[in-house]
Image (tube, rainbow, N blue to C red):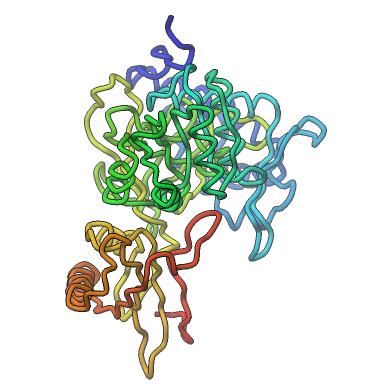
Length: 438
């Protein structure tokens, strides 16, 4: 029996039919957005109405929306309906001022769950699977987003939450977990727990699919995860401002993430000029929600950097694919006049077999200048105390990082298990410089 979460009538639309659907939904979204205090004023100021939208390209007539806008109009400035008609909110931590808050009504939650279910099905998860969600629940969208999507799909779902690796292993063994979702930086630590217990996840569990997301990671990091667990790891993309997970997902071909264009309009722009970039070029992803009622967002600047993958996917889906996120425009740091993204350094480290999975970039002022310092764990397998081997590893990192980012780093190799562990997303950059200008 065909699953309701393989929807060829939507997922294989022709370009013309998809454009027509987007225009229809964008007009309806604008009508709804006009009911919010923020967009009511912003769209009137821009002198654009829903009737002005004739093609998806006409979206460029609308103003951009930024995280600063959401914070400045916190908490209710983007809400399109009475609060009593909403049923849930999610928000960021708000550690540096007002958080960004997103409201949902029942339609929004159902639409979101359907997208996550479609995404999981796209990656090969089925209703017969046992799905273990190793992700934080609460205001963070990853936990509840995957929970409701997996339940909608029909999988037996274990809301394991983040951390407590020994319990994760026991749950996987006791209940025959076949699919998991976790952030990429946690998975090597989970594997270390298997090793410590004398277990092999390939032999001692039924795991067959890993879903990852929430933080940018390189293809080399994915390769390490797949080698550890002996199964496929599928990349995904989402953000709380667009509900959460389920915005874009890899299919079983692992050839880019299909961004669900029946629910979002995507644009790629130059972060400096805000002009569109050519197909294949890297740009900042800008998204417009098309199927959200309580709090639609128009032309939201995600700050995430990616590119469009040209051509069609062998799976038959026609929604365009984005490449893995290579960082954020606001994550870039400047050191000694050079622009550096953390993922550039991760790519190098993950291709060195002697290196473990935990690392940290420290930017510090040493004497009269700023220094790029890389702290990185040596893998347990290669931590033998052989100083000559460690010296060669250190020399290789210095050489390859210098060639990649044009800055010579200081490299500190540390023992396995000594880097700080975070329950959530891994912190990769610590800026201790006296002058933050770089």
